[in-house]
Length: 435
Ligand code: HEM
Ligand SMILES: Cc1cc2nc3c(=O)[nH]c(=O)nc-3n(C[C@H](O)[C@H](O)[C@H](O)COP(=O)(O)O)c2cc1C
Image 1 (cartoon, rainbow, N blue to C red):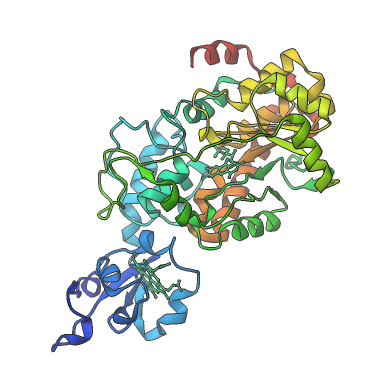
Image 2 (image 1 turned 90 degrees about the horizontal axis):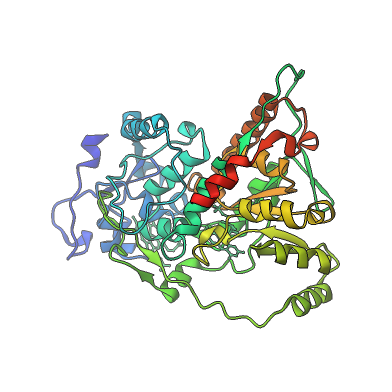
């Protein structure tokens, strides 16, 4: 296949059809090599755009722009030259193996602006290699254009909130009890706002899904439906490509990283203004006028506001929106611990939701043991979209399996048995104070 893929000519100044001798242009998308010689001059995005990727893997550039099925619609079977050999994946496998050996669990974000980022793994990762949520983040970093990955992965300002989200759950220890009978897989089912779901986690609303896959939110909803899970749909989901263009991309590396190597700084997305004139009174009254469904207020970051939710008869969702809004905001765990201390009745009488930095089933078990009703996952389900619906479903299955394993290892058969006796937060107070 390497012989075929090297048979290309980059012709940026003239139409392919104007050359006397026959030329061949090939490019690679999702591990398949295509002969685009005849198609290139009629490509709606322009011939030059396509020839920029001649002889190379165009997946990362192609995926966010085109609807699924485009290739089958415009290219014949004869123009599909074949699959790239499996050995192409080796360097990615190596890079994942190295990361797994690292004692520090790789966070789902990039380092701070001023930190140098090493060389990206260059080969296409495979869905079969994904065994943790962090693996999907690394795959998305390889497969998505730099600006898309930056939009999804970065946080506000200096990334203090996003970093805290990721480190905070490690400060809580689980308290495993031994010689508790676990005759079969523990039950992960959870009742959330009056409905039954297969697990205590859900898909967070996020306005970036279309950057990962052309089907955007629809794909996430279908995956959640298949897996018996809740998807909280984002009302603002629109054309994020347009939103990025409108809001601007700030930073030195705003251009797509063409050769996939060694960009030094992450681009950051400028935040839109956040001025609103709602109060608790007017917001709850407005929502009650629209629906009789239960109301949840997302973005609660203090125990006082959680108490207000309780007083207004709505449910608090502890979240700093994935660290994308206020930097130096508390993590959901910190707010949850404050609620336990200052207004524990909220946990008995409201359904409390948490999100931010959760990438492991064990983190979900900790949150439930501390009184949360369910846990939201944002980026952890956006990144697997680079593998389509099956990718998202696999990420969901991984989390369910991790929850089952954690429950079995701490000696409980169902989520309902979990309580504060299963976690040790004494170290959390000390460690959180140092963060
Ligand atoms: C087998 C390869 C490709 C095929 C069959 C293909 C096909 C198409 C089609 C049918 C459109 C019209 C819009 C749509 O229906 O989605 C389009 C638009 C476009 N394509 Fe491609 N394309 C290919 C590769 C590429 C590559 C490698 C790039 C590189 C970045 C690219 C960039 C674009 C751009 C920028 C547009 C315009 C999008 C817009 O204005 O909204 N295409 N392509
Ligand atoms: C790309 C992106 C876009 C988001 N857009 C929204 C949004 O429009 N509305 C909202 O309430 N939360 C939004 N969020 C926040 C998520 O709902 C959720 O709170 C957060 O992603 C959870 O953190 P995690 O990504 O670490 O799991 C967004 C998150 C991301 C990553």
